Amino acid sequence: MKPMRFGLIGYKFMGKAHSNALARLPMFFETDVPVERAVLCGRDAVWVKQASETLGFKEIETDWKKLVTRDDVDAIDITAPSNVHRDIAIAAAQAGKHVFCEKPLALTTADARLMQEAAEKAGVANQIGFNYRFAPALALAKKLIDDGKIGKIFHCRGSFLQDWIIDPDFPKVWRLDKTVCGSGALGDLCAHVIDAARYLVGDIAEVVGSLTTFVKERPVVERMAGLSGKASADAPRAKVDVDDASSFIARFENGAMGLFEATRFAQGHKNDMRIEVNGEKGSLKFEFERMNELWYFSAEDEPGEQGWRMIQVSEGVHPYWDKWWPAGHVIGFPETFVHELYEFVQCASQGRPCAPNFADGVAVAQIMDAVELSSQRCAWVDVGEI
Ligand code: SOE
Image (cartoon, rainbow, N blue to C red; front, side):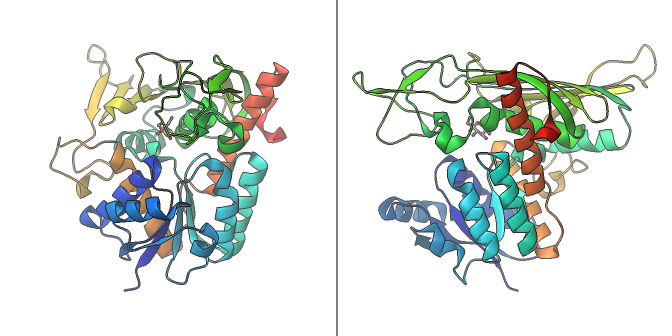
């Protein structure tokens, strides 16, 4: 059977997460086509070679333009920083390759739309890396909502809190450079929460928000590190042009209210992504750092027996669980990437639309741009304006 040969761009944090997922996918999941780690791509030949050996890729490429037109590659997986997503994804789609792209889809909604158009025109599978919705607990929350368990939804409360850039001497890494990442906490963190909210509750119609940058200048380091780094005391400083924190209120199209917050300045919070949904008949809440648990309150339980129940989402009946371990042998962050790539491979090989796809990436980009605009205007913004 013809395999799906992956060309992966990037080999740092997300590149490793995707490589690990591609390696483990065939060990646990039965895909319609075999999956191959074919070519790893990065600009520096020495480093990419080294990474390809560790991450199990057969070949390397240093120029993404060559990668996307190679005959021995069927799918392009983009984990490089956001400023290169647009050009790579469009070229890959035009070359007839299926495309998986990390979030945020692009620097702007306009660019994200170009990517969606190119992928749809080429008829290739396209998916965006909103991996949190692939936590079994969030997939179960979605099922419970679709089954009507919490009824009409009134509220959605989402947050994503981290604390890794509080030190003002922490360098201006690429995640803090607008030309490379598009936005700060908003695009890097809140994008996941917005996706989860759209997945569980539906589309957002209007937003009013506020963005803040607490540390306005940071030392520049020669090599822009990922999530860690130290600058020398005499390093020159440059302006930080992205948000350190962002919050917004939303009105969903179905009438529900939303409240969202993302920050990298919440001391003690490492990767604290949470979402809660309150409906007429019940509530659901999820906390990523306890990702094998889903909290559920049902107002339909017998009076006197009502209360929050914690569902340990690690039994064969739960989403994806039958593929993993015996009950209670919990999974973590890396497995969310296995799940999303499983969906991608299956959708691509069966010709089904992926979810979340580039259209979802565009919808999230629109909401984020509307939040930025609202912060500038100090007013509500209709998402349709973007
Ligand atoms: C860094 O803030 C980061 O790694 C994000 O880029 C990821 O999308 C998120 O999963 C965790 O935090």
